[in-house]
Image (tube, rainbow, N blue to C red; front, side):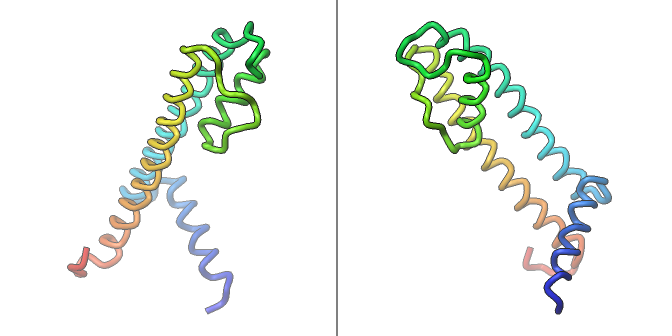
Length: 131
């Protein structure tokens, strides 16, 4: 089997998810869009809150809205940054919430893919009882 054949199949599956070709594809697309949309909204609201809580503090690295958006985005991507952690109590609570949301979003996406693969397996071979 040529190396590019699996990549073609993967590309077709991605197109089918985007186009919601089957109920399984639609379900996966809806779940991923929901997690992504919620994450963007949380990122923006958290950035505004962090900016107003941290901007006047001397021990923080957050002085502009751009700093706040960068910091919240890196927290949500679970990569963190070189910026110091928040110094206010409210900022620390938001930090914990962002870390919790990041873990939840990653596990929800992983679970969505697992459910998708399971359903696609059942669609492809409905007589296979190992599912």
